[in-house]
Length: 335
Image 1 (cartoon, rainbow, N blue to C red):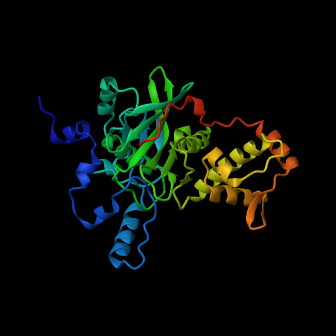
Image 2: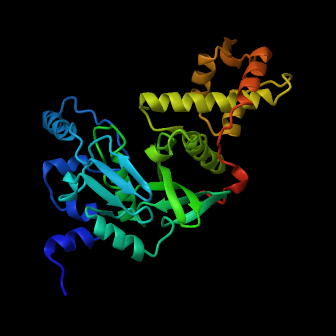
Image 3: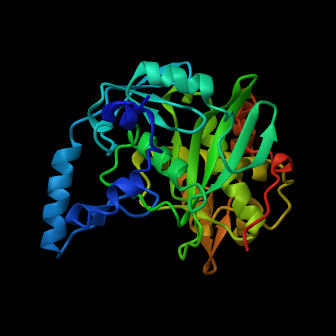
């Protein structure tokens, strides 16, 4: 008993957008490369400028209405370039373990009954309580990572989605219960970064936002940098929301570090950078925003105000901040 072609397309297939799109050598494919979203400047290139203008017109309009993912119904926020016929679906049904996407509730129900997976692919590198993190190589798990990028783009307002996930590692954060490991969010990281970027793209899915996962994901990226022995920084430019999130994280880490000291130590920014994994320029900009740095005898000197630290400690002690516990991380840097 064969299925009709539309059913086969909707129910079968591997949702491999790479195979669907990369064979079309038209101009628009020049935009589909990489594993992150950011603005590609088109100054001085009229062809690219025209292409970007066309791309902007297409992507102004949200194309997917909502997604069903596990027990959640989530409204989509932005355009995402899912392949036809999925790109005009009012509702997409997402398997939260494989990230396979479907248009029909009946196929989704059947898939959920039959799907053998209960975790993301890749290697589990972190487990604490019900929180678990998996590392995926974009080259080894191409379809999953591409589907993750398509799904994430529904909630990220960037001009361009890049499809080539091979140069990236993906770190998928999950909440674990008796039914499996449910995707909370993720970040991607270039395998090789000349600029020492330790994070390319970051997202907490809407159904898990306001739960402190943003700081956890940022702190995880810095735990990896500390293991590598080289301080890192998020890919620039940061979005407005990204700037706020990172400045909040940097402030927390630095003030916590200073509050643990007696005040007698000669604080060197280089040492702070190695201890925290945060690059020196990010440390300096954060301390400047707190008015805690002076330029003296040709070098930056940290000016720690004990009363300010005491107030911060009192306020911070009342907040539960979810950070990565390095003792629960079983990750070895890649050669």
